[in-house]
Length: 484
Image (cartoon, rainbow, N blue to C red; front, side, top):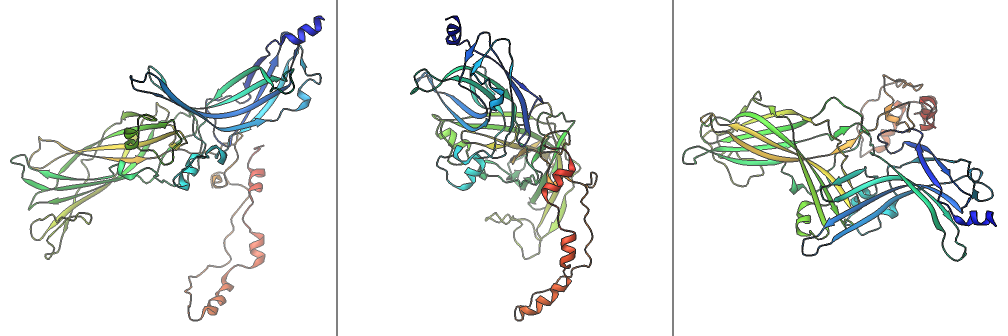
């Protein structure tokens, strides 16, 4: 009788989740190993032990004061289950006191989540592709509430079969352990902007007027572009400096003999916007949609001022137009901007370095079903006209930027190697041999296409192709490091 009472008491098991390779942050494709330890104070009968890695997102919107309620949404976009070996479980199905039960686990978070996690309606396939990419860990809170979050965690649940066989098993104990995940991408990822381009002012035209009576002095056109995304190391690795280069192109169309403006400084500002919704996003979000639909959408914008950069050393280049040209306006402008005869205009171009903050975590740009994080770089260009050195003018434009976490080859970690990561500094057993002969450029004769087939003799022989065939991925993995 005492033994039966102990078995039926169902004392809650104690669960401890540990990481074998604890670190501040993990990345996609990396092995996350650990051990789950279960102990009990009294004999406890159980049914099964479930170990899983889950990724979920939550959104909370504070409604207006008139409603006095909050609306929220949650979405579990990935669930990875760890099979538990029967040898690690007691055959009797009873946890006994004084014994320690250990269950190892290994998870690898893929770069893509299952397609079924994004089963809502979308406007085009690009949305599906963006929503099925693993998002980074994100927690956005204010002083009063938690707005939104994306979290990853290890969940362990010990269940027991209900005495009524028709009923579902009930939970004896459950435990979770969070982890920080930052997806990493290759350096070859393209810099595409799926957001609406009219949100950002990558080019701006400003009419320059004089200090007295507002007489027209000319027109200044500024165009800014960023060719590469902001590349940050994966995880929370410390870095000394993070510098990106912005291409700045200027054009000044003067009135009569007005000299071009004298450039002073660029005052950059990094704007990070977190857009969230309680309903699945059918298209890439934008601020104008959030303003029009505040009942189920929200946004949080954070602005960070960056160090200014002097551009006074940029020199103007004068271009003279033909005498028959009565306009020096740009191609996009339908209204000619008249100048003196013969007309002229000035241009200036430079790559301006912008120093980004290193004391904060830049979450990579992403778009998920409920949340998005986008960045924009606002540039305020200050200048003054030669005739009015005291009056300082400014022109502002905004350029979208993309933040990515670039995967690095680390032989001491458990991440799979990238084929492109084999460099000359770290050569492998694969050596590229030179071609036996050079290939000349040949033109294809449309009237006599068979004549071009005779040029195939310039190609290397089949024996050479077989001897120096490109390596296979498994060969690189086996030789580079012990990855498994």
